[in-house]
Image: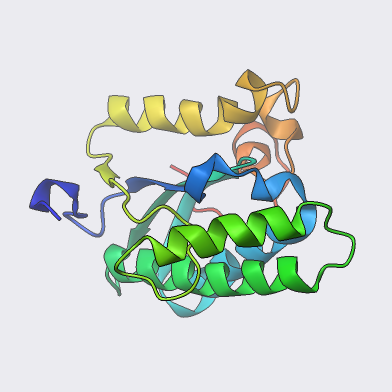
Length: 182
């Protein structure tokens, strides 16, 4: 991977996007979103990740993170690996999941066709961290993250979406995760 696609100054906020292979709408089910939220919570509490903004869409996740203790690349590797296993196991064991067979087949196929995987692949392999090192760049990305659910018609206002930090930024309420606001 080129160095231009690696996080630079770890203490500066970075915009990250993780996408499900094939743009499969895994996160239409709250249970799978909750797995990702719990994993983020763990990283905040135990891995020194500062979460500045986030949103979980139906087939991708946007985050703005920084860290003083660890490496953002290590965080990405660990959270993608852990959530892949947990979400796929949850899909397999969910008797009410109408898309189970199709999704598992898609994730198996993606895993078999990627030389870096053995069995399953949930997340697309690469990500391109964008360092948010100017106030203007930060403002643009922050608005983009929070308005994503509005643009696709999930909610009327950014603070109405449960799986986002919009509530933290637009109201006096607290969302699902501890957010370090700008």
